[in-house]
Length: 335
Image 1 (cartoon, rainbow, N blue to C red):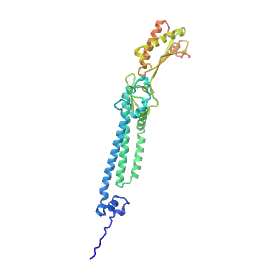
Image 2 (tube, rainbow, N blue to C red):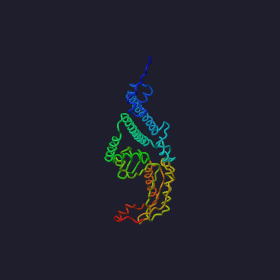
Image 3 (tube, helix red, strand yellow):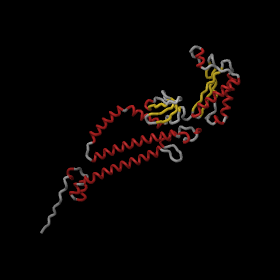
Image 4 (cartoon, rainbow, N blue to C red):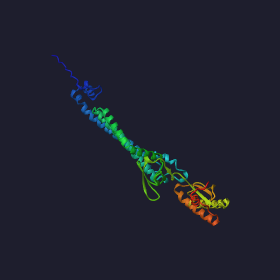
């Protein structure tokens, strides 16, 4: 009596799918037809779960790295992404931690939020495409349709995109920050908030201006690093320039030696000499380098002291350009 072994036929999925598929691998490993035929049903959900977990893990790790890069540590040091700003602060102004304050927090918060949103969008897009590919969905038409829709949205929202991109570059380059006094063309004043789309400025009259970042062509920052105080002192053409220079120099030395204003001066004040000569006045110019937060107060203090010292010394003041124009009937004096 002889026993004939009947070899089981391979399932149809092993011939209809590519080599290396789940069905083909399970058939080679087990030689069980029903298990091989159900291979795709078992393995496909596992692959989808693995893709989701891998993408979520990558998103979490990258977001943690971005948060660490854009956040200041406990020692008060500058965040890594904002480290270039540290080089812009002169040593004479003290440590950067005492200067940046709110501007650093806003910059790091805005940049971190944008980077995390971009990473999330990219990773979720890749995850969606990989999951759709598991269901054998042709991604070509889908990508083409998404490209057309994205192009249409881009044309419609190009002003918004322009504002956001400009805001990112302003934050990265540290063109201005909270507390800075800036001139943006149409609006000038103190920066109260810096966002990706708009910058909020409070002018000298108290008006709050919302300026779109994409509309900012130029920025004049009067509060970054250091500032120059320029004072023009007009004296009558008949007065002695040498005597007036002595009076001004004495005032400058007194202010520089004082405790209140001397500590904000970054260099010795300098009397540059005669700036202009007109039939109405001889103008002497004074300049000094100072802390940007003190330039206006120091300028007013110097003007008041120089004016009083000139009066006490009996030196007659000359006419300013505006006074000379009014006296001459609107014709500007020749310099």
